[in-house]
Image (cartoon, rainbow, N blue to C red; front, side, top):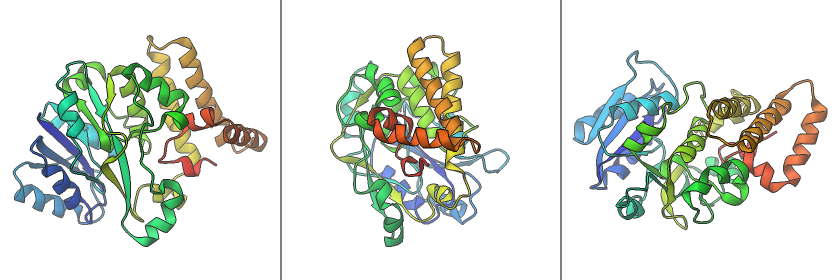
Length: 313
């Protein structure tokens, strides 16, 4: 296996070295691609030092040296990659020693186009734990049962609460399958939740198989400067970002002719539900929707992922 690990870097000078070293521990990792996204801290200098120190570490920026967000930054990493497989890692997260154990066996089968595993959590500070423990706890972010690839897309769309979640940090993809089956990779229009939208489409087009689900293969690093902090501080309106997410999903579903009509209508209902919830003139509908979501787990859980489940209303 020749794996390209893509790490978007923004405001992560304290953590990116750990992320890089956690990827370099594997002989299967052909290269670690750092895409520096105009960080306000000293992350660029740290990345330059890492690229100089390790032959397998490659550093890039956007052509205009500007900030473009996680989606376009990951897209640039994919464009620059030369490995046969693609894995992702956020700059404040890290891999565990078992990260590619399942992949080494599963990818021997040509029908396997992607493998997903379980993500653990680590709180870098006590303050971060106090702030986000209710959101993440000590739980694994994982799919709860081993599903056939044909059921992964519908499981995410219809029954996320009982289906579970897989994170982009615990995902490995065949590059040729990705490039052949998905014309559009990460959406530049989404500054948040672009990974959620990507995983929806990915699970529709590619055969994704479960790897290690009962123990973590990677760790989510939680600290006070995580992107979700922007939601907590009201710099970003969580209701608006959810509308944007489901608008993108709905636009895709409307244009993808192979999606069954009942699935397309379900996605449209989800989009309209969030439009109602985001309306400043419809408090009555907000209350009805909130009650509806709380009392019907299979529907409620199907419209949000762990990155924003604590900020529904």
